Length: 264
Ligand SMILES: CCCCC/C=C\CCC/C=C/CC(=O)SCCNC(=O)CCNC(=O)[C@H](O)C(C)(C)COP(=O)(O)OP(=O)(O)OC[C@H]1O[C@@H](n2cnc3c(N)ncnc32)[C@H](O)[C@@H]1OP(=O)(O)O
Image (cartoon, rainbow, N blue to C red; front, side):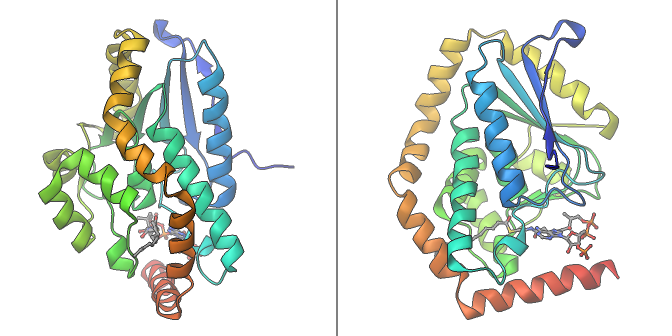
């Protein structure tokens, strides 16, 4: 049987129609592996084609974690072919979310490092649980890896040039309060109110006529999307070359060990 990695459905609760809620449920930490990325892309594609759907809230069914980012096991000890396929799926997820015609809101109910942060930043609006134990940010350099240009562009478009320099070079993970301060997230609420607040925010976004909002969104995001679209193959090649290096594989191995030890 295929494992359902997420649930997407149109809800009509409290008069809010045409809004889908996508709940990532890939235990233990919603790390973005090929299967989850593919499921997410297929679900978003279907919603995008469904004329009755205008908005999407993405959240997590896992306790304490929105998403642990890219699944390191998809990049560690794998063949170049596998790494290439995986990277194409990461690109696809980013392109679909960043360019979505839907209103997209991230209900960040837990930690969201690296690829998890990227995913949240592709959305139009971010609400995070106000729990100082949670963190969010692009921490790639701390793993000894380099976030590609489109990760950097997404961050820069969200928090600005100088903050991106600091955040990306130091691989900073921010507490929710810090993330709010730099504009990485838009709103903090108590943990049990993340989803209801997302629904309330959605009402505000849906009050704007779709065509005007969509054209405006596209005008702002298209140059960033086009940059990856015209460099997709080179970006895959760069990734495979970079991730296959012995030194990078070693860094990933050390990091995985650290994660396991921290748990013990
Ligand atoms: C010059 C040109 C350059 C071009 C280069 C191109 C590209 C390179 C860049 C690639 C980009 C990568 C982006 C990423 O997303 S990398 C992933 C980064 N993620 C992290 O650093 C997060 C690591 N995880 C955590 O910090 C924590 O797990 C947590 C999310 C805060 C949750 O903590 P907790 O609830 O305490 O859970 P555990 O830590 O105990 O984890 C449970 C279990 O899950 C394993 N795990 C956690 N994260 C990942 C992951 N991302 N991938 C795979 N596995 C993960 C963890 O090891 C535990 O496993 P065991 O139960 O087996 O011990």
